[in-house]
Image (cartoon, one colour):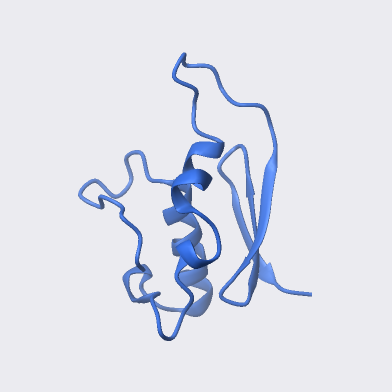
Length: 93
């Protein structure tokens, strides 16, 4: 998986970057912890996980960020992450 993610509380405050890894692992039928090189691309080789997490995170003043989306390719899939935290994984066209 090659992400620095504290998994001690798996459902509380889970990062968007881990959601991406988890969604791709589900499509591949593997455990997210097994989604690592050399069989799979490292997420940080495709997109900066910390930047992805920060992009839609609540601002320091508590205000939500504007709506938006990020699209990128990862492990042979087209990934779309929206500002509401939804992660869509589809085959590349």
